[in-house]
Length: 207
Ligand code: B12
Picture 1 (tube, rainbow, N blue to C red):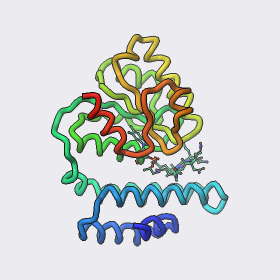
Picture 2 (tube, protein in one colour):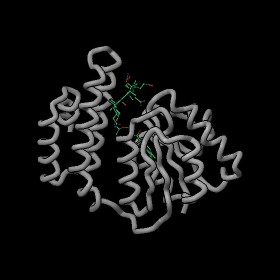
Picture 3 (cartoon, rainbow, N blue to C red):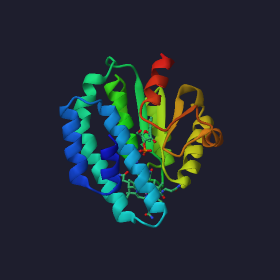
């Protein structure tokens, strides 16, 4: 798996995809391949921060992750333990943020676990999220954001849910690699996820 991580970090798309095909054919755990991708992305982020990589590398890394995820998706189905129609989940990347790869993966995994998932996309206005909570009535609202500037729109969503009298109707999850206890508290959400499985465990616990 480390080979995939290193190939992704070095921008070797052909190698990433060839290794993915090889590991899937060998019956390796598809979730472990996704974890290896994420570790590669973390390294890309570090190189970007160090000034070694630029936005073009971020774009390429995003494309690699999307292309690889498409290969992995059909294999995740078999490993899902869930049944159909366990409840509704609404997901969105908040206003000002266009990072959607992790949210889409989390959405797919929740679908495979038996939840009905509505994905509003990225850079979604606060008012659109509130309207959709009213109309769709999800049991969980998953707000995703990777930028520091995503925290305030996340907080605004929670505040407006309160103002609309909807806060007790829906659990709010924050998704993103940098989300921690402090941000959770600041936003006033119920739980956070730095991976795509915490949410499924949480949803199952809600009954
Ligand atoms: C790929 C990428 C991009 C791509 C995004 C493509 C896309 N369609 O998403 C592009 C090139 C467009 C991009 C743009 C920018 N990016 Co960018 N990007 C990244 C990068 C390298 C990887 C993100 C990623 O996809 N990771 C892989 C996924 C699988 O992981 P994940 O998102 O964390 O998701 C997992 C969990 O967090 C969780 N999760 C996430 N969401 C959800 C939702 C739910 C409901 C659940 C349950 C779970 C969940 O589950 C996922 C699966 O395990 C990160 C660095 C990093 N390592 O995170 C920088 C990073 C996020 N970007 C950064 C920056 C600065 C930018 C730009 C501002 C650059 C610029 N100057 O233009 C723009 C922002 C534009 C905007 N307005 O949003 C910074 C953010 C810094 C900050 N603190 O604000 C980072 C951290 C890079 C860095 N180290 O500086 N970026």
